[in-house]
Image (tube, rainbow, N blue to C red; front, side):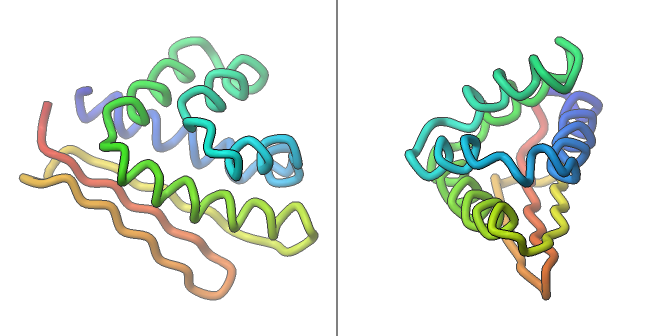
Length: 123
């Protein structure tokens, strides 16, 4: 995936995560906690909230991300979304780029801000 597509996918994902509808979606939380792959969930969410190109960019990012990285990020996101569905307020920030020689995933929780950063080699 080119850098432009990755950055566009991160922008779309940040928009979805800042949506009150997504944060309060108990069915979404249940799907994440059940271990469903985020790309499958994003395909359904994308059909409701984004354009076809935006949805495909999101799916491509998650399908290209190594499984262990996806699992870690999904668990962190599921935890925070479950707490948000219970009434806590979270701010989500997701960043990604293809400037790293290695695939790196960083997860940081500071106060009520969950930050997930994804770096990967150029494609």
